[in-house]
Amino acid sequence: MKKLSFALALIIVLLIAGCSAGGSPKGAVQDFIKAVEKNDMEALAKVSTQETAQLMAMFGEKAQGTAKEFGKIKSMTEKIDGDKAVVNVVFDNGENSDFHLVKEDGKWKVSINMNK
Image (cartoon, rainbow, N blue to C red):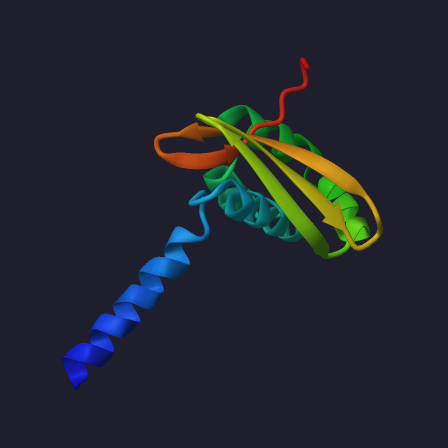
């Protein structure tokens, strides 16, 4: 019985881990938004391209305040095209934002490009 309980616990942990930290575009965006809300640059770097992490570090507390104004996520849709994805997020305050992602080393990362 202990072996079965351990196996079930291990499966649950693996499933939860797969749903965050870049496991899917939606998961990466959720982790990104949480990191911005907390101004957690270490967590943000895990789900962002290097360029995006540097950009967010420059805006730190301003981005944190903006994220809090948007409120909670109301809905999310994702479109994946190979190693690129777009996640549309609708927030409680009615704001609607597209997050662009790229797949780096097998993980989805938010990519904000100021040159677009």
